[in-house]
Image (cartoon, rainbow, N blue to C red; front, side, top):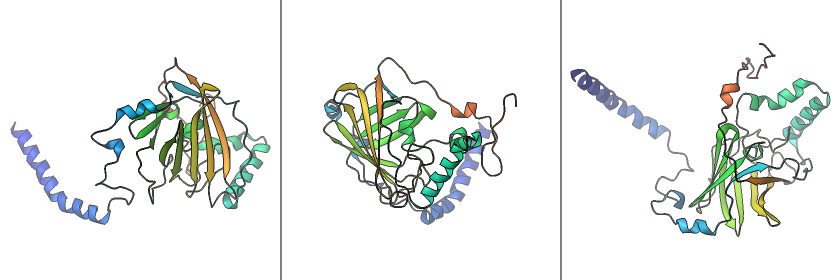
Length: 272
């Protein structure tokens, strides 16, 4: 008991001594501009309207990508370093050198998340959860979570670049329209070597196929003043699977390849 009391006094003294430095740190590192502490948006409000969810379309179940069903998009009109990067990757691929493919896939081999729109286009299933003011996307690959706020909040003015960015959506009938900004420079648009800048804006229109309610369609439009000469469009389709459950996907358990001094993955051979 005496030991506990003494330990508590030491801990309390440590906190008190640290308080001025913590206050100084807070003053020198103010809260980011896109965080509004005094504003509570409906998605986080104490009282929410669950009855509004009954008006939304039925997206229950898991959605598996229909890899061969989506139309193959045209190559976007790239410019600057983004075109140079694409041309370099395509040249390497045409050589037939296995190292070329490894160069493209190094990020995934190091368990780095695919980002947007990669979180939506992995060859694994998706699940959509509807709650008041928010749509949550759960991707089986890497056990990723994406949050799309539909509670009326605006896009952040100066977001920190992240893999999945900041997504704000609204419903137009049974179509979920999502705008995403704040993506990291160098993310991919869904095809090898096609990358975007941190100025990219992605607009998605997500809806059920009118001819088949067990097919979900995602229409993408990319706009990027630094990487694209003109907007680029792509379409993905998903098939509903009502009898499946997602399984655990732990990338780190399979990541046994070391990283070299350049930050690249050194792929081990069989038996290494």
